Length: 250
Image 1 (tube, one colour):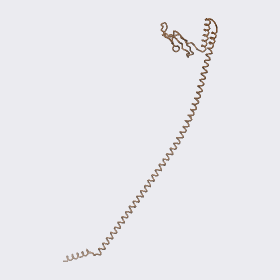
Image 2: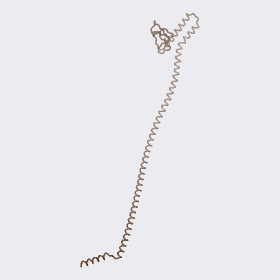
Image 3: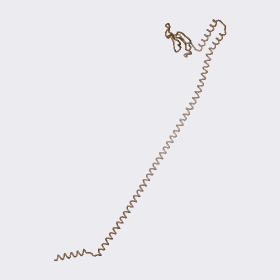
Image 4: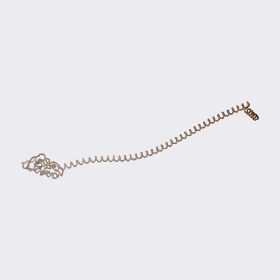
Protein backbone atom coordinates (compact mmCIF):
# COMPACT_ATOMS: atom_id res chain seq x y z
CA UNK A 1 0.00 0.00 0.00
CA UNK A 2 2.77 2.29 0.80
CA UNK A 3 4.32 1.72 -2.54
CA UNK A 4 1.09 2.61 -4.34
CA UNK A 5 0.78 5.80 -2.36
CA UNK A 6 4.31 6.75 -3.05
CA UNK A 7 3.77 6.14 -6.75
CA UNK A 8 0.65 8.27 -6.75
CA UNK A 9 2.45 11.01 -4.93
CA UNK A 10 5.25 11.02 -7.47
CA UNK A 11 2.81 11.02 -10.35
CA UNK A 12 1.02 13.97 -8.78
CA UNK A 13 4.21 15.86 -8.47
CA UNK A 14 5.08 15.10 -12.03
CA UNK A 15 1.72 16.32 -13.18
CA UNK A 16 2.13 19.44 -11.18
CA UNK A 17 5.52 19.94 -12.61
CA UNK A 18 4.34 19.37 -16.25
CA UNK A 19 1.49 21.72 -16.02
CA UNK A 20 2.60 25.39 -16.31
CA UNK A 21 0.74 28.56 -15.80
CA UNK A 22 -0.37 30.83 -18.76
CA UNK A 23 1.95 33.68 -17.77
CA UNK A 24 4.97 31.53 -18.23
CA UNK A 25 3.76 30.46 -21.67
CA UNK A 26 3.29 34.05 -22.84
CA UNK A 27 6.66 35.07 -21.55
CA UNK A 28 8.20 32.19 -23.43
CA UNK A 29 6.38 33.27 -26.58
CA UNK A 30 7.68 36.80 -26.24
CA UNK A 31 11.19 35.54 -25.76
CA UNK A 32 10.92 33.40 -28.85
CA UNK A 33 9.63 36.32 -30.96
CA UNK A 34 12.41 38.53 -29.64
CA UNK A 35 14.91 35.87 -30.53
CA UNK A 36 13.43 35.65 -34.03
CA UNK A 37 13.64 39.41 -34.42
CA UNK A 38 17.22 39.35 -33.22
CA UNK A 39 18.02 36.58 -35.65
CA UNK A 40 16.37 38.48 -38.52
CA UNK A 41 18.29 41.60 -37.59
CA UNK A 42 21.47 39.62 -37.37
CA UNK A 43 20.78 37.98 -40.72
CA UNK A 44 20.04 41.38 -42.21
CA UNK A 45 23.22 42.75 -40.74
CA UNK A 46 25.17 39.78 -42.07
CA UNK A 47 23.52 40.21 -45.48
CA UNK A 48 24.34 43.93 -45.49
CA UNK A 49 27.88 43.09 -44.44
CA UNK A 50 28.12 40.54 -47.20
CA UNK A 51 26.76 43.08 -49.69
CA UNK A 52 29.20 45.68 -48.42
CA UNK A 53 32.05 43.22 -48.65
CA UNK A 54 31.01 42.26 -52.14
CA UNK A 55 30.77 45.87 -53.17
CA UNK A 56 34.19 46.48 -51.65
CA UNK A 57 35.55 43.50 -53.51
CA UNK A 58 33.98 44.74 -56.74
CA UNK A 59 35.44 48.18 -56.15
CA UNK A 60 38.81 46.66 -55.34
CA UNK A 61 38.62 44.53 -58.48
CA UNK A 62 37.61 47.58 -60.50
CA UNK A 63 40.44 49.58 -58.98
CA UNK A 64 42.81 46.69 -59.71
CA UNK A 65 41.52 46.50 -63.27
CA UNK A 66 41.92 50.25 -63.61
CA UNK A 67 45.43 50.07 -62.22
CA UNK A 68 46.20 47.18 -64.56
CA UNK A 69 44.78 49.07 -67.51
CA UNK A 70 46.80 52.12 -66.48
CA UNK A 71 49.91 50.02 -66.17
CA UNK A 72 49.23 48.36 -69.53
CA UNK A 73 48.63 51.76 -71.09
CA UNK A 74 51.79 53.10 -69.54
CA UNK A 75 53.69 50.05 -70.78
CA UNK A 76 52.20 50.50 -74.24
CA UNK A 77 53.22 54.14 -74.16
CA UNK A 78 56.71 53.18 -73.09
CA UNK A 79 56.95 50.58 -75.84
CA UNK A 80 55.63 53.08 -78.38
CA UNK A 81 58.10 55.68 -77.17
CA UNK A 82 60.90 53.11 -77.41
CA UNK A 83 59.79 52.21 -80.93
CA UNK A 84 59.65 55.87 -81.86
CA UNK A 85 63.12 56.40 -80.41
CA UNK A 86 64.43 53.42 -82.35
CA UNK A 87 62.79 54.72 -85.52
CA UNK A 88 64.31 58.15 -84.92
CA UNK A 89 67.74 56.61 -84.39
CA UNK A 90 67.40 54.51 -87.53
CA UNK A 91 66.24 57.56 -89.42
CA UNK A 92 69.25 59.55 -88.19
CA UNK A 93 71.59 56.71 -89.14
CA UNK A 94 69.99 56.46 -92.56
CA UNK A 95 70.26 60.21 -93.03
CA UNK A 96 73.95 60.08 -92.10
CA UNK A 97 74.54 57.16 -94.46
CA UNK A 98 72.62 58.94 -97.21
CA UNK A 99 74.68 62.08 -96.68
CA UNK A 100 77.90 60.07 -96.84
CA UNK A 101 76.69 58.27 -99.95
CA UNK A 102 75.63 61.57 -101.46
CA UNK A 103 79.04 63.10 -100.79
CA UNK A 104 80.74 60.01 -102.20
CA UNK A 105 78.60 60.07 -105.32
CA UNK A 106 79.20 63.78 -105.75
CA UNK A 107 82.94 63.20 -105.43
CA UNK A 108 82.82 60.36 -107.95
CA UNK A 109 80.63 62.45 -110.24
CA UNK A 110 83.08 65.34 -110.08
CA UNK A 111 85.97 62.97 -110.82
CA UNK A 112 84.08 61.42 -113.73
CA UNK A 113 83.18 64.87 -115.05
CA UNK A 114 86.82 65.92 -114.80
CA UNK A 115 87.89 62.80 -116.67
CA UNK A 116 85.13 63.37 -119.23
CA UNK A 117 86.16 66.97 -119.73
CA UNK A 118 89.80 65.92 -120.05
CA UNK A 119 88.89 63.22 -122.59
CA UNK A 120 86.64 65.62 -124.46
CA UNK A 121 89.41 68.22 -124.54
CA UNK A 122 91.90 65.58 -125.68
CA UNK A 123 89.46 64.38 -128.33
CA UNK A 124 88.87 67.89 -129.61
CA UNK A 125 92.63 68.46 -129.73
CA UNK A 126 93.19 65.13 -131.47
CA UNK A 127 90.44 65.95 -133.96
CA UNK A 128 91.96 69.34 -134.62
CA UNK A 129 95.43 67.81 -134.95
CA UNK A 130 94.12 65.12 -137.30
CA UNK A 131 92.34 67.75 -139.38
CA UNK A 132 95.54 69.79 -139.56
CA UNK A 133 97.50 66.61 -140.36
CA UNK A 134 95.07 65.69 -143.12
CA UNK A 135 95.27 69.15 -144.64
CA UNK A 136 99.04 69.17 -144.29
CA UNK A 137 99.44 65.71 -145.82
CA UNK A 138 97.10 66.58 -148.67
CA UNK A 139 99.20 69.64 -149.37
CA UNK A 140 102.36 67.59 -149.04
CA UNK A 141 100.96 64.98 -151.43
CA UNK A 142 100.07 67.69 -153.89
CA UNK A 143 103.55 69.13 -153.49
CA UNK A 144 105.18 65.69 -153.89
CA UNK A 145 103.07 64.98 -156.95
CA UNK A 146 103.91 68.37 -158.42
CA UNK A 147 107.61 67.85 -157.71
CA UNK A 148 107.47 64.37 -159.25
CA UNK A 149 105.72 65.66 -162.34
CA UNK A 150 108.21 68.50 -162.51
CA UNK A 151 111.16 66.09 -162.34
CA UNK A 152 109.65 63.81 -164.99
CA UNK A 153 108.64 66.59 -167.33
CA UNK A 154 112.03 68.21 -166.87
CA UNK A 155 113.61 65.10 -168.39
CA UNK A 156 110.98 64.56 -171.11
CA UNK A 157 110.56 68.11 -172.38
CA UNK A 158 113.97 68.12 -174.12
CA UNK A 159 112.78 65.12 -176.15
CA UNK A 160 109.73 67.11 -177.22
CA UNK A 161 111.99 70.03 -178.13
CA UNK A 162 114.07 67.77 -180.38
CA UNK A 163 110.97 66.35 -182.04
CA UNK A 164 109.74 69.87 -182.77
CA UNK A 165 113.14 70.74 -184.28
CA UNK A 166 113.13 67.54 -186.34
CA UNK A 167 109.76 68.43 -187.83
CA UNK A 168 111.07 71.86 -188.92
CA UNK A 169 114.25 70.49 -190.55
CA UNK A 170 114.04 69.55 -194.21
CA UNK A 171 115.78 66.36 -195.31
CA UNK A 172 115.44 62.89 -196.74
CA UNK A 173 114.18 59.74 -195.00
CA UNK A 174 117.65 58.73 -193.87
CA UNK A 175 118.18 62.01 -192.06
CA UNK A 176 114.70 61.74 -190.50
CA UNK A 177 115.49 58.21 -189.31
CA UNK A 178 118.74 59.37 -187.72
CA UNK A 179 116.88 62.19 -185.96
CA UNK A 180 114.26 59.77 -184.60
CA UNK A 181 116.98 57.40 -183.34
CA UNK A 182 118.71 60.28 -181.58
CA UNK A 183 115.38 61.26 -179.98
CA UNK A 184 114.82 57.68 -178.82
CA UNK A 185 118.27 57.52 -177.27
CA UNK A 186 117.58 60.82 -175.50
CA UNK A 187 114.22 59.54 -174.30
CA UNK A 188 115.77 56.31 -172.95
CA UNK A 189 118.43 58.37 -171.22
CA UNK A 190 115.67 60.45 -169.59
CA UNK A 191 113.90 57.28 -168.39
CA UNK A 192 117.18 55.96 -167.02
CA UNK A 193 117.64 59.17 -165.02
CA UNK A 194 114.16 58.63 -163.58
CA UNK A 195 115.12 55.02 -162.64
CA UNK A 196 112.57 53.70 -165.10
CA UNK A 197 113.61 50.48 -166.84
CA UNK A 198 112.12 48.24 -169.49
CA UNK A 199 110.50 44.99 -168.35
CA UNK A 200 112.40 42.04 -169.86
CA UNK A 201 110.38 39.77 -172.18
CA UNK A 202 112.92 36.99 -172.79
CA UNK A 203 112.13 33.60 -171.33
CA UNK A 204 108.91 32.35 -169.82
CA UNK A 205 105.68 34.22 -169.30
CA UNK A 206 105.33 35.87 -165.86
CA UNK A 207 101.81 37.05 -165.00
CA UNK A 208 103.22 39.46 -162.41
CA UNK A 209 104.90 41.60 -165.10
CA UNK A 210 103.41 40.39 -168.42
CA UNK A 211 99.94 40.68 -169.92
CA UNK A 212 99.10 37.84 -172.33
CA UNK A 213 96.71 39.14 -174.96
CA UNK A 214 97.13 36.23 -177.38
CA UNK A 215 97.96 32.50 -177.25
CA UNK A 216 99.39 30.40 -180.08
CA UNK A 217 100.03 26.70 -180.71
CA UNK A 218 103.63 26.27 -181.85
CA UNK A 219 105.68 23.07 -181.48
CA UNK A 220 108.90 24.94 -182.21
CA UNK A 221 108.50 27.15 -179.10
CA UNK A 222 108.69 26.03 -175.51
CA UNK A 223 105.54 25.80 -173.50
CA UNK A 224 104.50 29.07 -171.79
CA UNK A 225 107.19 31.04 -173.58
CA UNK A 226 106.83 34.58 -174.97
CA UNK A 227 106.65 34.48 -178.74
CA UNK A 228 106.06 38.14 -179.60
CA UNK A 229 105.93 41.52 -177.80
CA UNK A 230 103.14 43.86 -178.86
CA UNK A 231 103.93 46.63 -176.37
CA UNK A 232 106.87 47.11 -174.06
CA UNK A 233 106.36 47.36 -170.34
CA UNK A 234 108.15 49.58 -167.84
CA UNK A 235 108.77 49.55 -164.10
CA UNK A 236 110.43 51.68 -161.48
CA UNK A 237 111.92 49.51 -158.78
CA UNK A 238 109.20 47.05 -157.71
CA UNK A 239 106.40 49.30 -158.96
CA UNK A 240 104.97 48.31 -162.35
CA UNK A 241 104.28 51.35 -164.49
CA UNK A 242 102.93 49.40 -167.47
CA UNK A 243 102.67 45.65 -168.08
CA UNK A 244 104.27 44.18 -171.21
CA UNK A 245 101.65 43.13 -173.78
CA UNK A 246 102.78 39.78 -175.26
CA UNK A 247 101.83 36.65 -177.25
CA UNK A 248 102.35 33.35 -175.40
CA UNK A 249 102.89 29.83 -176.78
CA UNK A 250 100.82 27.01 -175.26
